[in-house]
Length: 113
Length: 114
Image (cartoon, rainbow over all chains, first blue to last red; front, side, top):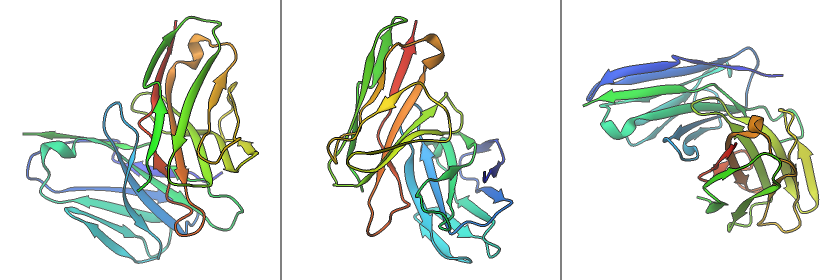
């Protein structure tokens, strides 16, 4: 099956710094999604990308759908303490007849005030 | 954004008990999913449904079962809980027409089997 490699596995940064994380795949996807999960809660959808090369922003978050359709990036600018959590990428390939997502293993973000 | 609810949020039970984890959504989404997640780890799809009376097993084998008798309700049942079932269980839903791939998650049920 399809697999996603998400990196880095964890990040420790100072408040105010910018953050970058990415996901790569050996096969193409038609949709990339980025989620954030707070401790003890379910993942919350941050950004959805539907087109190769697409760059989408949501406040301080910016995500890009790689031109090869095999990768995606998430950037967080001017981090704040509430950005702490686990960030998951997820991809979907529409060639099949299902709507299942393939999830990355997550990036744990810690922000030091 | 979907409103999706899970109960209970936390459950501690003894080995051998039968349990049902409830999941309901109020957005009329036709697709619903169950994931299993160990703390801080990746999500594993264990069941999904594309509509009433439709259920399928996911990518991770699970001893649990599901049913979909009503659009809004997708309960998960364990007939005889074991310590190996200790995990977080997340329910999600997505709609068919506009954004069928975007899944919206409930808050999860953290299950501990003693």
